[in-house]
Length: 307
Image (cartoon, rainbow, N blue to C red; front, side, top):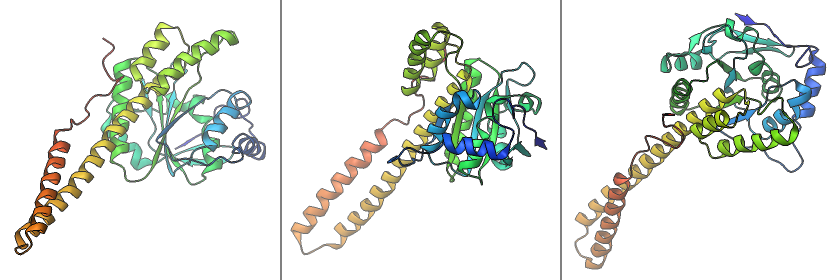
């Protein structure tokens, strides 16, 4: 199945040459800047003339891997609360962007809330406007589109936890893109104050804090759902990385422990060397015990129930 463009000619140019030129203009990195490998990013999705400079600045500052998961918001009513497309391609004036079927299937298995739903994506612009940037910056990329039409916190956390678990298990680098504008339809001064409050929660990686702030402060951040899911996934990835590093440290220490123990048994004549090895053995044993006492991170700030 090929999903045809819904907003070409309105949100961005329908002419391939014109679109490519605009993307390259917006995504030209500043002099002296280098690209970084990141786990996730948040980019706007208004018309290219409004949001292209910001989206281009973000995408041009990071390395675009071959696999991308895009979390968009479902602006229009029809469709599932959490909609995924796991087969086919999305067409833009720049060509077809292939869906990563294998990764999509893993996400569907990990999160039963994700429903196969092409209708929810058919007229949605929040994901579509990001595709040309990815096509220009990495023509070989494949992606998984997810549209979230729910503002229910528990559902958003559930989706984010599943995404985080799947991405943590993958050996290949995967970029998680959350598509969202910030405050809408208010004067500049008010919008800057509200945007700053939302950005503070994003920088704190506080999913619940962002959710509550937008609700309590009446911040019309349309991609609140994708942002909450993204932050949740990042906490899962952080916990997984922490566990991996601890396992690597334990493996190294246990190897040292076995070598030192064997050395102690085979050193007979040098009392000084035996004493040094025994001291080293005690140090290793203390470090192993210390690592084993470290709690495994189960919950992270911002993942508590809103109740």
